[in-house]
Image (cartoon, one colour):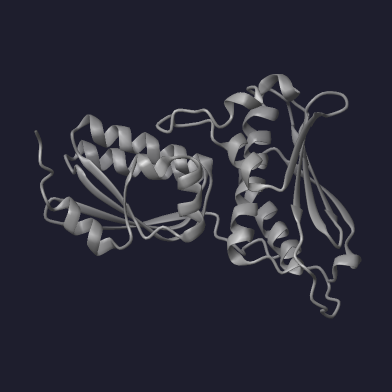
Length: 278
């Protein structure tokens, strides 16, 4: 496929978060034609995930048999994604002035700010007949010639599930997370950490090296479990964050909230060392 072979495509998905992996696979297939680097693709994927998740959770609430329309427009100088729901429209959104003014330790509300910051141009308009249209536009790098290909979408391009591998070392629990830390994975992570806290396991290291995707739902889950850990006077450390994840933590100011280490070894050593108290 070349850029000129797909100038506009329209698809319709059920308003179900399980279809997010399909949207991701389709985006990656199309974005691959633009020679975006890995960092850029990951950040773009975050914005599309936020828009789709928002359409499912907020835009389609109380709408029977709700659907989300996805429109892809490819041009030589930009890639444009539109997500269209049929819910409550702009009335359901906070004002723009509040998007980036959240308490960093608040569990939710980061999605709109991430979309705004990580796209080259974002617009939100009322959908005709009710609902919200989110338009995300990304400037394209200079194209490189490539032969035409048939469009093929591999919906298993990114795993749908999150997996946890646990290790206990004395009083310390190390959880190595693999896969997607999105809405579904976030709930599983919260359940696992709360179970460990109930078992009086209060020193926790989360190794995120093999997390191939994270969005605001995942960030909210991390903030939520951090609060749970603090309530029992424990400690939670994060380690091995991908570069684009570090960037998101900086944007959302979460780098000032969590204990973050470059390597798992550094985190283990830090949490096995008592914190001095005044």
